[in-house]
Image (cartoon, rainbow, N blue to C red; front, side, top):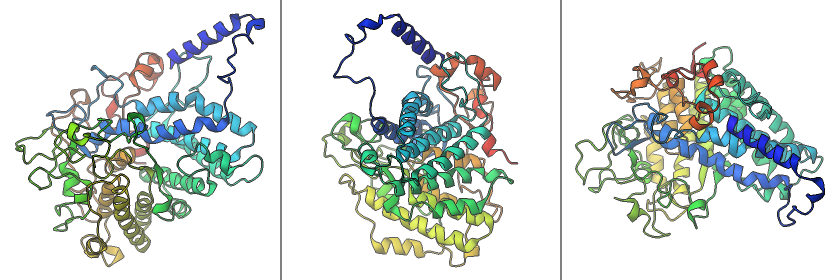
Length: 529
């Protein structure tokens, strides 16, 4: 962050030294010095979806969504690459919050407020809140109060407790502003650069309430702060169905406007599905019930069977015919990217609409909150809504770009949902494991940060107090962990190397961030209280 401030100071000095009478000569009429407030929005919405996918390449190995074909993968051992050749790996959310959003979001916010564009201001506040929540869930303590102070060259970190308070304050302010109809509120103006909801305030209000539910549910380890009724109310004020899902569209005509996970971007070529996600779908965890979504989400092996890799073991003893195909469904990236119309699978196609928040995800959150409250009837109803909605989500995403999987039939769906192993007839028979394992399936390959937060909230291997089984049944910590961890699991990403460890070591030192095992320090939000 110090580097950014130095550049700003240099720019200011250069500007001040120029003679005022020459300013008009050096003004380019074709490059305006001030832009419309709404023009900032589209790039930030892009990063809102893309930054978690950048970091998801690494977080997804902590959560066992994904595994490398190579043995002893750094991230699968709960490690990081800050001492390696790519020290900023896992730092995209940090960069997006402070740089891609950064001053751009401040400018958009100030212009929206001064012009009384309350709808745009509400969206800006949602983005600000999203940045703080994503950064704190990823990194723990973050810089908020001093983040954009041009007079500082070192920056103090704020507590995660404050980050959560600020996130909720911004969400509530956003909801209030989005409900306003006075001033210069204009759906057409906002819709010009809003490619998620096309300027519709009602949709953004639903989004904000869903976002609020996610935040509130993270307090599950804080007895005095966890309020299931508030979570349920926020979900009920949010999405009414899959039609409300927050999705980022991709044109897929070039590398930069293609889905981040597509073959043309080639970001996941060495990654495969894991044995854990497979176990949730092949009848292992949900005994003898094969999930119809498995063949629509996961990739088969060349011999037609479905397998997953175990963390740190690479392909192990699997023969070529037994090794899972890549996530696009091919033996190589070249084959998956043979042409612009080569079909892929599920969320891995060029033109996939990519989710930020979904109805299914929020219904699982409602189910968890109701379950913890003791309202099992409400929990079961929300759970059924969630699983059903995710089936429909899978079908929809597999039609975004002509993907190879067939549609899940109504019969397949109803048969699965009718199984008592999946959906108990008696609400009192619903388990926390069912809710959380099905939520894991619904977030697989896209909801990386929420997935990791779920696992950390349940300390990876906590047990369901009712069944005495692990909440995440079958989830196993790798035997050999990253040496710096000192046998402890990862709890956070270290702050971005080239921002903080190069320029803000004083701030890091104050929070213990220079310790080699800082990544294993449990975060405030997951610490029982």
